[in-house]
Image (cartoon, helix red, strand yellow):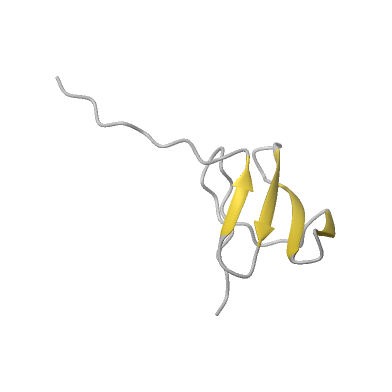
Length: 64
């Protein structure tokens, strides 16, 4: 399974390798990415779930 890593700021798919990577608590892989929107974010890949810091902002539906 190939992970699709997206920028939490602009939503673009990341095609490049992380700028830096390391292990967190010996169980989670962390990658620091710089998107083409010039912002940095961390992608955490655990055994059961994946997440980014900062979190992806969800857009609420606006009623007119």
